Image (spheres, rainbow, N blue to C red):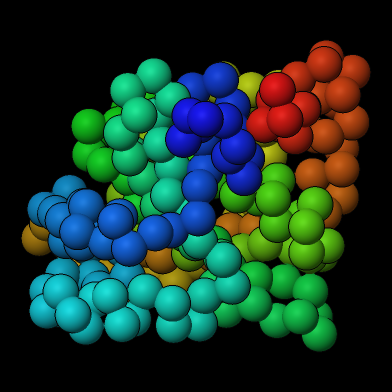
Length: 201
C-alpha cells in the first residue's frame, strides 16, 4: 500500500497526513528557515531542536504534514490550535517550504485543514493571524485552485504590530465560518469536486 493511499484530506496535488516523528527534522529546518522564521510561531527565535519537538504539541488540537502527491515530498505543516470547544472556534496556521512560494499551495493546505475541522469538529468559526506581508500574496489564490475554496474575512487589525525587513507591519485577524464552509461545500457538490470525495478516491 502506498503512503498516499489513505490521506486525512487530499486534492489531486496535495495530501495531509498526521505529524510523525520522522517529520521533525524537516519541520525544524523549514520552520526556522530565513523565509519562514518571522512568519511562524518563533518570530525569529531559534530554539534547540529538543525544545522545538517538546513544544510541537503545546495547545494544539490537531496538526498534519502536507505532502506533494507527485514527488512524495513534504511541502507544509498545518495546525489547529487554541481550540475553544465551548464557544466552538479555533485558530489555524500553516508553514510551507519556500519552494512552494507563489503557487498557492499554502492556501490549498489551509482549505484542506478547514474542511477537516468543520466536518469533524463542527466549529462555528475558524480564525487565523496573518501578517500584512503574508496576507497580500494569499489573497485570491484559493479561488483559482478549487471551486469550493473558502473565503476569509478580516475581523480586525493590530497596526504596526510586527517588525520585519526594516519596517513595522500590521497583523490581521481573519476568519471563516461554518456557514461559508457549508455554502462552498454545496457549490462543490454541484460541480462534483468536493474535497472529501477526492480524499476518498
